[in-house]
Length: 149
Image (tube, rainbow, N blue to C red; front, side):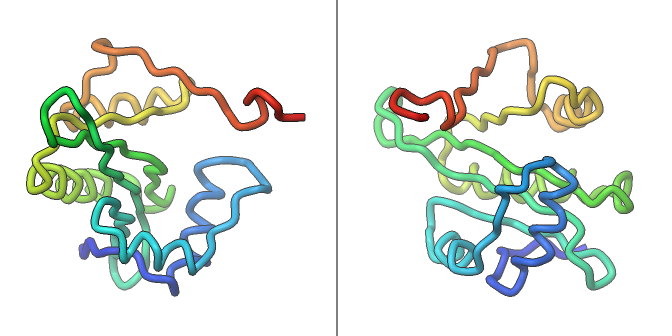
């Protein structure tokens, strides 16, 4: 198992993985955006290779905060492991990499959101040390923004 930063040439495979995560025809992975994330020291788009294939991915971004001086917090998004590779430790391996990145970045905490109906994912996140009962997440999508039509 190898975890590395995603590269622009991973765009097609990431699109395939994200289509397992959400059923949304608007999902489009641009190689240029992957390159921008690759170059951004405050964000990491990790992929996990298993037997030469990209079978998992996660995005982690650091957010500036004022509560703890210059200490950032992290937000994790787009956690996906290929359905055929689940149970092999891919997700746990990705989360170890996230924690190392966040620890080395002096993060105060790591936050993530998960769709309410993904109870298997919630169980996995709790096994990774996340507490689903401590805070409650809220989402407002672009279509509901003021001025959206």
